[in-house]
Image (cartoon, rainbow, N blue to C red; front, top):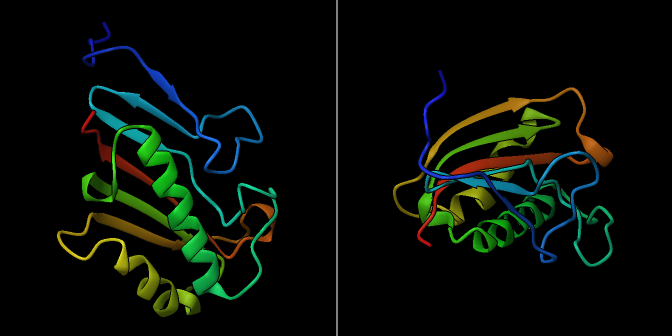
Length: 134
């Protein structure tokens, strides 16, 4: 039978990141961990895709993730795994330059894949798993 994973599931939501636009949550906390939904480069104030190149889009994605992690009582220092989706792997170096600034020490495990298509025409999407500090 099922095991107790150390607590009940808690839904995380913040207005500082784009609202969920379907049957999903921005993040879920359970057993001291937070699992985020994938974040794309939507401006939470306008709900629109940010203009600019992959660097600008990656910056917005990471700021959205930072807001969701913060609402869950976590931060980038607690991230243990990310999954990154790029519309074009030729953008990898520019993406990595921005992404790397958020993980200057002890970066998390990571998978990066090219996706055939991302929501709203985004060029990048990132999701993560982190340990919570609160």
